[in-house]
Amino acid sequence: MTAVLIAAGTALLVSILSTPLLIRWLRAHGIGQQIREDGPKGHFTKAGTPTMGGLAIMAAALAGYLAAHVKTVFTERGLLAMLAIGGAALIGFADDWIKVSRQRSLGLNKRAKIAGQLLIGVAFAAACVYWQRVDTHLSFTSAKPLQLSLGRVGWMVFAVLVLVGCTNAVNLTDGLDGLAAGSSVFGFAAFTVIGFYQFKHLNLYHNPASLDEAVIAAALLGACAGFLWWNAAPADIFMGDTGSLGIGAALAALALLQNVDLLLPIIGGLFVIETLSVMIQVFTFRVLHRRAFRMAPIHHHFELLGWPETTVIVRFWILAGMCTAVALGLFYTDFIAHGGTG
Image (cartoon, helix red, strand yellow):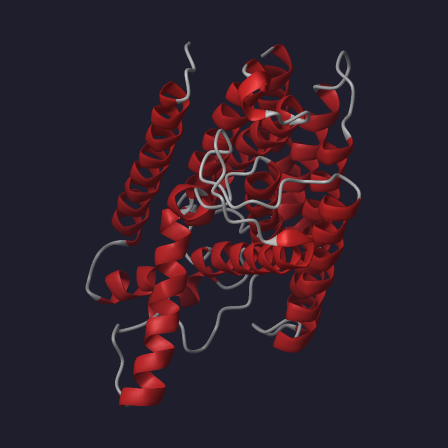
């Protein structure tokens, strides 16, 4: 428990203190956000706001992770997760850098971005299966996985889809000040609790790296919470793709390593809703030649309905918190059902 608290506390402190330093450096070098021309008109005033704040999130999370291991040992699964997170964040950084250096709202082209995500996903999945020998059964809580085993190849395909889907889902949600960062705090809180319970009850969950995974989740929780201090509306800095892709990869990696992959869509319910809104919008426009929403992702739809930005953000945070509560309730119910106590 001490390691988890150290990770969260260190990451929170580093994030709060380092983000304003990053803001000043970005402003001094004229590095600011480019706003999409087809976005809500009210967002044009945000042009020039420092971006790439995900650098502070990732640095703070790494600091928290390292600080927590002063008295505890690193695990191979923990290091594997951190490498996947770092790899996704690097793809996001490349995307952000192209945007700011070329002063345009589009960074990497879609093919290059997806190719990079697929590369990270395949490498992570292969390492999980052939190096760490992860359980290839689908599972909600890992106490009693489903009878359906995907096999090594099938699980790898599934893991790649989860990682790519999750990174893009968080990226789509990152459209309002503090929306993605605040929503991610709930997700990482859930994985911290799940990891700690798996550590305390190894005889039930059989996850040798559960404490290390709880530490990673706690570090990211603290990093996102600290960043939110500066990212809350009106934002002084945006996380950019550096942050959103890194956060998305972290949520996916933790779910897959903790073998709660089927619980992930509930934990990240808000991200699922945001992604579905885009898919529905594309489908209805191309097939029915009409738009289901005024603008997608769905947070922009409510903006155009007249909701103040802060109202959309807070209500979506509440929705994210409710999804997390449901997921943890399901996890704990299953824990009790399998004889767990405490």
